[in-house]
Image 1: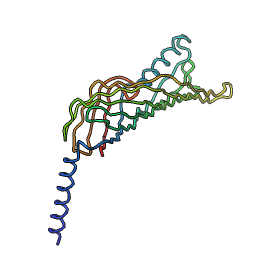
Image 2 (image 1 turned 120 degrees about the vertical axis):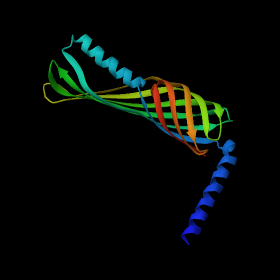
Image 3 (image 1 turned 135 degrees about the horizontal axis):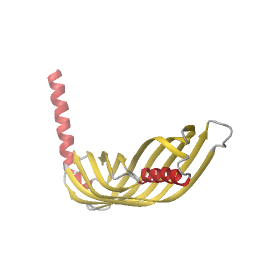
Image 4 (image 1 turned 180 degrees about the vertical axis):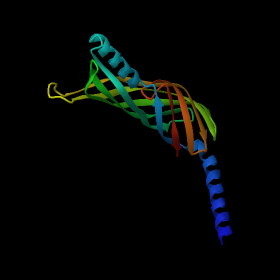
Amino acid sequence: MKKILVLVAAAMMAIVNVNAQEDYESMKHEIAVSYGALSNSTWMAIGDDIGTSFITLGNVRYDDGKFFGPLALEYFYHLDPLVGIGAIGVYAQEKKDLFIKNDIIGEAKNTYLTILPAAKFNWLRKKYFGLYSKVGAGISFRSQKEDYKSSDHDDVSKSDVFFSWQVSAIGIEAGSANIRAFTEFGIGEQGMALGGIRVKF
């Protein structure tokens, strides 16, 4: 009985795989999740830290920073085998200690939420492998908070909006017709290098 079940399961998987290959060119939708490094928001945070230290001659500084993200979710609809249009959402957060001279006086937290309408160009579109480029432009929302340990300082909370983008010059994906791992290299809010998983249907 077990052998029969194994054979049936293997046959079903083979059928699904064949159908996926036959339907590959008709797959219009794709959803991806990725995690990157060296994003626009990372460089912005580094610039803010250097600027604060420079302006105050080192008396006020940020240190012990921890950066999460960029974590991205994206969707593309393929108009044809070459071009897909969609959107990218990105989340990132930074936490760091705030110092006056050598004393920790509080904690700062910056949260970034980004929305990028985007386009994807599939230069090589095979059943198990692909090469592509991607470009997106939109806006980022940044929330900044500073919580102080002492009542001598008032907590600070502010937000701003700024232009953001992602240009992935080269993207490489590999896997099955439906599910693929990918990596990209470029510049923007998703990072200079990123990797993730993509599902096509």
